[in-house]
Length: 484
Image 1 (cartoon, rainbow, N blue to C red):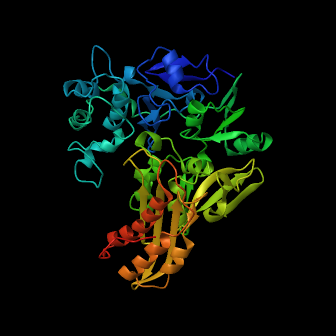
Image 2 (tube, one colour):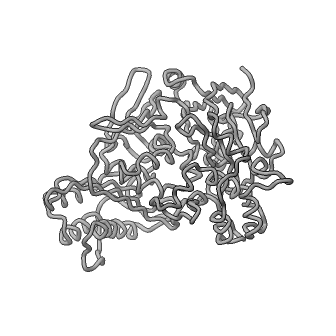
Image 3 (cartoon, rainbow, N blue to C red):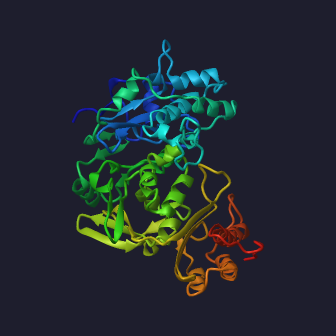
């Protein structure tokens, strides 16, 4: 098989030498593209940001910002990327570079190339201008620029006001913009890859059947999609795998299929795509996804990956538990559907067996009409939660007929708050019920103390979350001083 190759800043380059665990950042820097910086090696600072050509869903291309420090270079075989060196030239600066320079958006400059790539990806977003016309958003400028697109980029010396000013000053791409014209053509499709090196083997199978066969024949093989979790282990903990199976481009895992009774969200669908789909459809997911890490991470991270790690502090399980979701597990022998409440068996342990793959997450329809997702963390964006809570209530004529509450960060696994649910069902949705439920919720789980929060704090936050949920529903209790 030919050596892996990719197009970088318009030029075809062979990926050699490179190992299975060589990141895109490491390879790019070794190839002389030193604008790609390593800051945290965890996907938190954005100094390594690049743009990758991805399908836009309509036969064209979208420029998507990603963390080069987390993606193995083998995963980009056959793909097309742009680094800060390819956004503009020394003879002709890109509009993003011009605005960053003119408005003082750079001092030491270490973070600047990553900001430029993230800002350029948002600059080329096709519907950006329509956002300026009043579409609901978090923090959009008068030009429709979504400031959240920079949430994964950190600057320690410039300050963010001049960077924001540069973003809000951007107009539309002009007619001669090469990167804008490139968006009219299809993005590169997946390429079958089989890279064998001294540090392991990386395989991108042709289809789901091939992937399941590989996993069945090689117990312990690691399936990866966005690499936003595994990439951290590779960089920080020195983790190495004998066989890595890339599943991020498998069509069977990259679709969102709706029926009258449920929706199947493919395990490899990026969270950014889920965010776009969920708007106006599944309110709880619309609340959850913007609080998940940063846009750079969400452009790669997946539901399958978040559930596959079995982490008790993952952001998606509490919301999915509240939605009554199930996990569709596929193997060479067929499929089985496991309710999410039965999926976790212990700390970072699940019922998924060797040879099985999460194909999709199944959410029953219709969803509960009253939902909320609350995340308690030290930072607004790009932080691990101390406590995460997903609420879903069915209310008929003022009475609570069904309740599902998912919790993260208060036990060895994500859990349902079953005692609080029982406290709610059959009662009117009023301040007395909210107070009693808040007290019950504060007693759920077995929260522990660690560097993020004390066990007492976690319990109090559970109680407060219930009162906040009630307050947001329209009528608040007269006091929020609930002791768990």
